[in-house]
Image (cartoon, rainbow, N blue to C red; front, side, top):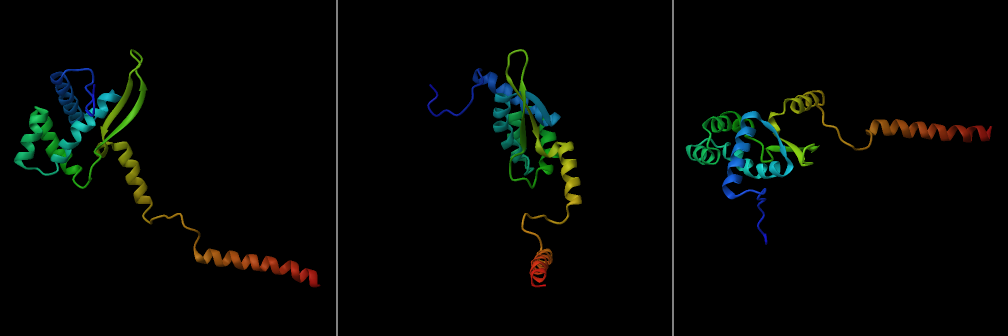
Length: 167
């Protein structure tokens, strides 16, 4: 029985599960997005986001702790040299999980997990939108100038039937 154990064992032993998460995190760091099952993607997010948080402060201690989790010097270098500076001001939520549907072979839920700041398509649309929308838009009512013009038009329209009735 689980009784409060919140870890998803993914049907594997401890060694197999840790090796799986290590390999998935290395692939995510190197390729910036990977396609895997939904359960693995959710567990990978819990595993890799603290590593990305550690990469914000580029100290020897944080490099060594990240390397002990990754066991790949190229992935650790990529994490601290490229990913860390890019996500420096983001307070969290470095990954995005997108559901892709079911796999044909075994009907498993598939998902795409990606690093949020490295999606060029979404970032390009967002930056183009921010450059065109320099003024902040609100959902408030129309401006007072327009309101006064509308009220004057309404007053004039109500005056004309009464004038016609008097004449």
